[in-house]
Amino acid sequence: MPIQDLRQFAASGAITAAAGLRPAQFQPNSIDLRLGPRAYRTRCSFLPVPGARSTATSLLDEFAVYEIDLRDGYVFECNKTYLIPLCEELALPAYIWGATNPKSSAGRLDMLARVITEDGHIFDSIPHGYRGKMYLDLMTRSFPIKLREGDSLVQLRLLTGKDAVIPDDELRSLVDEHQLVRTASGIPVAAKDLEIDDGILLTVRLRGQGDETVGYVSRKSTPVVDFSRKDHPVRPYWTYIPGRRSEPLILLPEEFYIFSSNERVRIPPQMCAEMVAFDVRSGEVRTHYAGFFDSGFGMSGTGAHVVLEVRNRDMPFLLQHGQHLFRLRYFRNTEAPAALYGVDLDSHYQGQGLRLAKQFKTISDPSLQLGLWAE
Image (cartoon, rainbow, N blue to C red; front, side):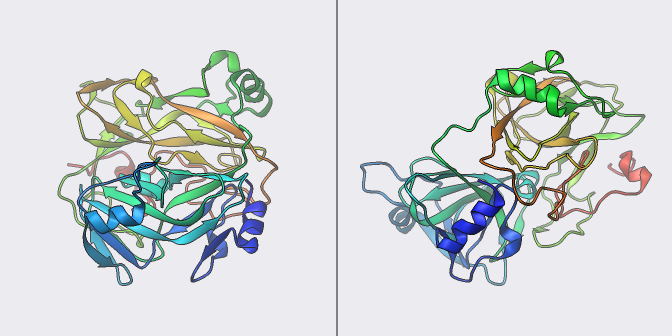
């Protein structure tokens, strides 16, 4: 559903918030959801079970440890579970359902952020015709993070019953027609030169010029990340991965990495796209918490590299340059959005290369870009 329809739905009362909705929440194909004034430390994560008469409210009553006031901010500790009622509530028509994803900044901070509804039994899925509250199930994995009422970690898309996924045969034609994929230097890649199987399979970039940084791995026992700030120094939180290495790159279990795609991608106005979070065929790694790309992504130039948030799973895993690591599915829009990512709206990650979350300083000193500071 494009931004103009989302605005109309909000005006009709289908999306509401006690303090009102803000214009900046509306994105080309989604709406940002905000943290409410209270959060709860819980003993565990949970989902309601159909037929068991359990709801998010009843489970919260049973498993909450203590209540947290978010109005002045609170530091969420690593590897602990929290549930946060969101500001927005829904009153959807019967033919509309929803899907949620973490926003890019939440994914790049290694935050596992999933939405549940009062009686929904699937994470990040809003049932047809849902009426009620939404809750954020949250765990931060790498960093202690200070959050406040009104912060936005997830986004909501509204969809009709019609399957909007673009099938592979059609996608092959669109790849050539709209130059959906380009090389790092901006040259269009033909569909015949791509692996297209339930979306476009794309690869990871691990080679750079000289000592150019091609990735980051999060440090342990770091200072707090204040989600509202954009000036955190990089060094206390991240170690660089240089493109020129004498040893192979082996991902270690439960480490968190940031890489970028080898290719540049483009999302035209008539489409949006979703990253598959984990694909067992691509190896024992989970890629990309933030799985949604608005219309207009990469369209302001020669395309944009996709930043990959990678958390390894059970065993050490060899990662090689040019290895298929993620899958991009494209969806049809009901109509082109009235505002596009990076063109009509302020978009932090348009035209990105390898880039950390917006909470960290942009590295402009060439010596820092080459990773000479890390150890």
